[in-house]
Amino acid sequence: MDNNCEQERSRGRNPTPRELKELRAYIANFLDRKDPNWRLMNHVVEYIDLRADVSRYHLSNSTAVQKILKLDGKFVVLASELPLAWQPKTTTTENPSDRVLEQRYDTYSNRHVTQSLNVLRLIRILLNESILSHNLEVGSPPSLSHTAAKNIEMMGKEICASVPQYFDCLGAARDGLHGNSTKIDPLHSPNQTFDCYTLIYPLYIAARSRFSPNDLKPWSIKELHYIGSHFSIRNAELVAQMLENGTDCENTWGVYAMLGGYAFAA
Image 1 (tube, rainbow, N blue to C red):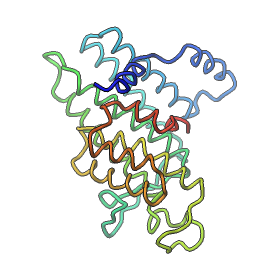
Image 2 (cartoon, helix red, strand yellow; image 1 turned 90 degrees about the horizontal axis):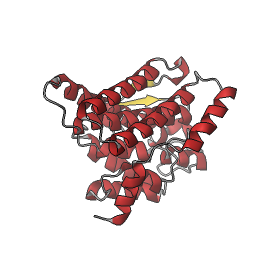
Image 3 (cartoon, rainbow, N blue to C red; image 1 turned 30 degrees about the horizontal axis):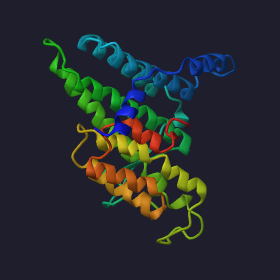
């Protein structure tokens, strides 16, 4: 096994640093604790700690699944309580497009909302993968695995629906371009390029799951190649190649670190 992969796995077993928790506890005195981003990051911290606990303390299958389900439920509640400004507008296209999966895409008020919701989705994918990867004890309801698989499928499709707004230059993203919107190779601002960069990790998480729909992985790989070539983002090409070659060491946090840790910075 590659040493770098093993080192990244070891880091993934570590809980949230105590200093970060203390800092967040202090900052909480000056912020609106009902803010969706603040609540989201609280749940992400819980996820990191739970992942470490499951690995370090060898929790039983039933205990681990119970804790995972409880945390996944918190993400579900958060998603159900989002303000109206966070809700996307769904558009159905009349004709198939290489940039749109299943002829449907979502438009958000800004990149920060998209990024935060994609963090919620990718963590839910990882949580539900954990449910499926555990050897559930005899007597566990079969519906549990079915529900987890459906959750992964739904989150993956929602991630894919969030991306055309930012890179479909001749369609969903046309209004955000500089200059002539019908130009085949338009100029992109640094902000537009960064918008696309923030899509790489969610697309990677959605595509790498073996529980995602069959068409989702090849579509995501194609879009990552497009981001890489059209927006000159080399890391998008690298991630696409990892997915194609299966060389990501099955380690999501190694890819996260390679991308610069931007994904939770909404």
